[in-house]
Picture (cartoon, rainbow, N blue to C red):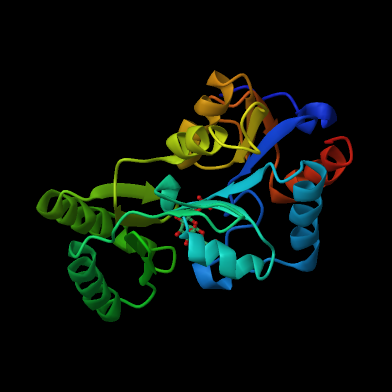
Length: 248
Ligand SMILES: O=P(O)(O)OC[C@H]1O[C@H](O[C@H]2O[C@H](CO)[C@@H](O)[C@H](O)[C@H]2O)[C@H](O)[C@@H](O)[C@@H]1O
């Protein structure tokens, strides 16, 4: 059994640059991606953190930049989306590679499969197509087999996730996104702190530690590059609210 990680000190965000995963870290997992919402408490927390840290806050998500931005409404945010492949700074500067044409064919194939199987769901992102099987768990092996075949055919990156498989533009992950964000003001020169729950968050945990900062694992203990741990989303929100007041 993996030992629990220590709780992060409340002063950890002092003078830090803060990087946050979204699903499973700031919001609890739901049956479908479109059932997740940002409530007033979370929106206020992110706004307050951004203010206290002089803009040194970014979301790093597997969702697309547009998807995260829509969830937070008018709140100006720096977002690395599509697993770190695309970035939008809160000043509006964007870095987005071209969407490969092969994704449209993949969308058509996944949609056909999903139409034939209740519970399967296709999520279209800026730079990827994801097939979710949370609503049809018996389709796990078939979904992975289909994604593997499509990856072989197209050369696109095969991304696994919690009850989903995705074909996406490769060449980036959450670790490379964190390093990219840390190269520019206002993040540069500050200690990175990253919070995440998933295997896809591990490259960012490792990148934060390598840059002199720390990762915080949300959820049950497991082998991780994180230095600290929090129990779940509720614990994470409560810790962020406390740490925020000691952040500046
Ligand atoms: O990097 P994250 O911000 O954690 O995003 C990871 C994926 O999150 C979403 O899928 C997951 O959450 C859904 C809603 O709770 C859930 O239904 C699904 O089973 C999970 O895999 C999102 O839809 C994906 O695009 C993200 O890659």
